[in-house]
Image 1 (cartoon, rainbow, N blue to C red):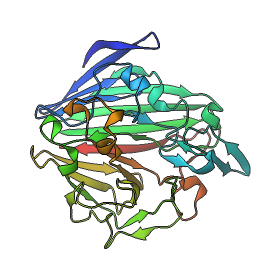
Image 2: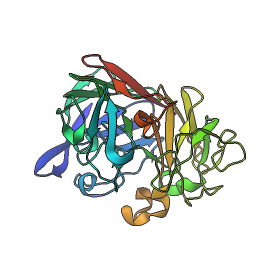
Image 3: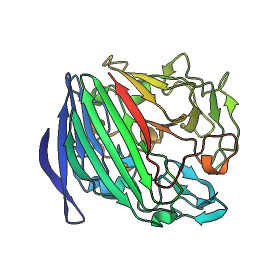
Length: 319
């Protein structure tokens, strides 16, 4: 494992770590447990910033870890064990991706482990409104052409926890746009949303809709009512998605034990959020997760973690 100074965030040093597999090079930051680059056959398949502070001041949650709870919580509130918790609001009346602090803006303690590294941070009781002091750990293990990302957490109070990584993939790298990537999502149902992108609480069949990726198609083949995709899919099993570069022919298989995956293509059309270089544009976000607002909806797995009980989730990327 290689370690180097990458830059400064709020006058604190940010270090970059390099893991190597079979013609794969993964660079990770201790700020946000961020995947700064992921080269496969010499092609960087994720969106990247070249300056540490860009990950602090620019939008998009680019390839950072997300927590405590990924995606949106309606009205920034939830009930647990008869208590109502008011969370911080950072998207209108709602909370998005953990609130004003979020795990993507934390510094992590790092230790080397077999085939990878372990990053650890602490979220205090009441941070962004969530109950419980929660210790969060994320491990990255790169073996051959497989990257395992393993999340674990322990809280001293009952709370909610649903991590993800906010990947922006482009299997073509700098030689083509992500919109022409070929995508399969192994999901028979998606969750329709309201104008604030909060699920309506129903699961709708993808058949005959722009949300049917079961047989595979270009990312931009169909249009949604939003003009982009920013929707949740309920997975059929642990094989979540396949993404193939139409120019590079690189293939990615995504697996997870979480019940859903978010697809977001806003980075491809809102390029003012990102740098003008080709390598820094046009990613499709694929984020394994619990359903948005699941804690407030019936009929969905709820991301509850009991006091003093360790809980784990994983995302696997196979090339």
